[in-house]
Image 1 (tube, rainbow, N blue to C red):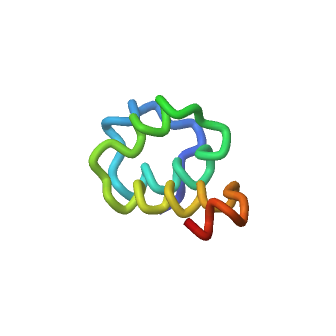
Image 2 (cartoon, rainbow, N blue to C red):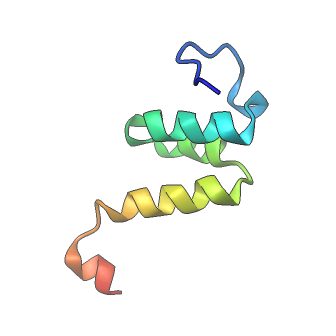
Image 3 (spheres, one colour):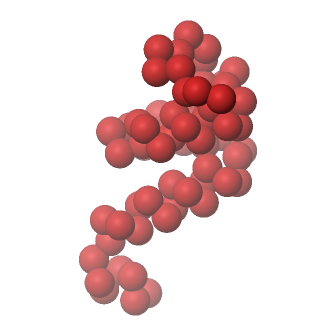
Length: 64
């Protein structure tokens, strides 16, 4: 499946696969509210978001 860069669906209407592609492309630029809306109840995207967030952590935060 090729990801449609010009999506016309609302975030809530995206399939899990479409949400994941959208997340990979746009997550770094998304604010917290938009990211929470995208994640919704999807555990996979939530875990991916957490892992992405870790890249911005300091060494001290990682040790905790």
